[in-house]
Image (cartoon, rainbow, N blue to C red; front, side, top):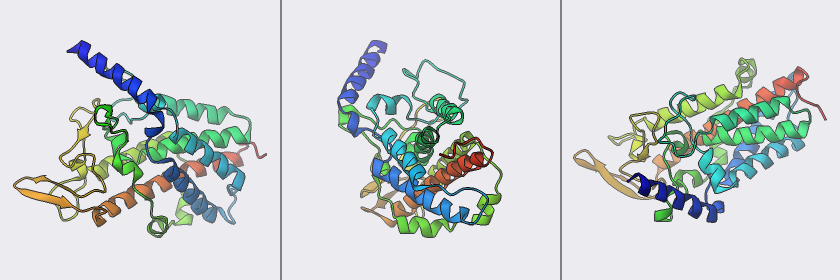
Length: 292
């Protein structure tokens, strides 16, 4: 059995390598939208404050790296794609390859804080915001291994759900005074807070239905293990029917329930990106960011 399992893993690695461009978290275009919306909102708040606004060049450095990481190789996504709900310093043999993102995230943070060129710092911030945005995707936080080459399935359907930019901006209603008065928060803390919010959302009841969103992404009892797709399967955004105890639950194509859930996650992605951008702008006031 162990030999068969190893063979399956090897086949998955080979097949995934051939289909590298098909595998990522949020679609690259969505990552770019999150970044531009966050920069727009943050700059509105920074207008007239003692902190510098993000320049168009800095925003493009961030967005370029964010998108580049979203378009990265299948192996990179597999290796660094999933949040570890348990202690980050524990390792188990069941993880054939270390798929957890934390070590890479810390490495990027170190590179960003030690970089001496503005372009390098904001490019590194783009890689970091890519991870923060992914922490609003349930499949990456529960986590659920969504790359199933034997079913020709290489992504979680939530990750391609379209953004409603107008709804995001309306829902955010950013209180700039509160945002700027908030204490400085390291990006690692933003990562944990964002992932925790997603876990709470997954465990929340679906409005008008007697089930939680774990019908789509079911958490493992052991936080060291992968979760799995629930009774609704990898069908976010589609019409789906599944058992709810003795009754049947039904969601329609592009159901308003899908829209509401996705909007909350997308707003959280923009908020996390704003907090990371604010963190770097505050460092610039202390001379830790090169101004040119």
